[in-house]
Image 1: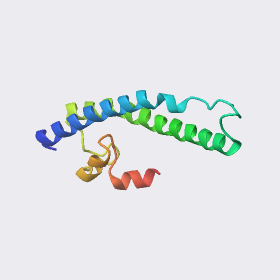
Image 2: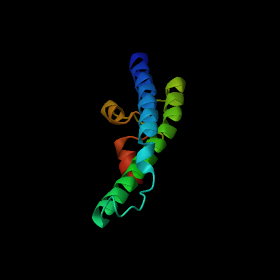
Image 3: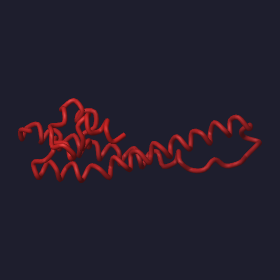
Length: 114
């Protein structure tokens, strides 16, 4: 991968880290438990609220996972290994890295490990 492309991905990773950190801070309110106040919401509304909390928790878990993968991707850029599959050492298609710049596997290896 040439230096210009690697630098673009490095900046994309830094931007992604900023966005995910900001989203995590903003969404922390959405993961708080739903309080039981039957005068305010009915049973179905409470169930909807509980489902929303669980969805927010899952989104937060995924953001945290992606945040944890960013430093390793930045290290791979620094070492010149970025864009290479960690299993078969083939190039990862650039389009795949545009979807998620933290990917470590080519599509073939990713399909085999699922």
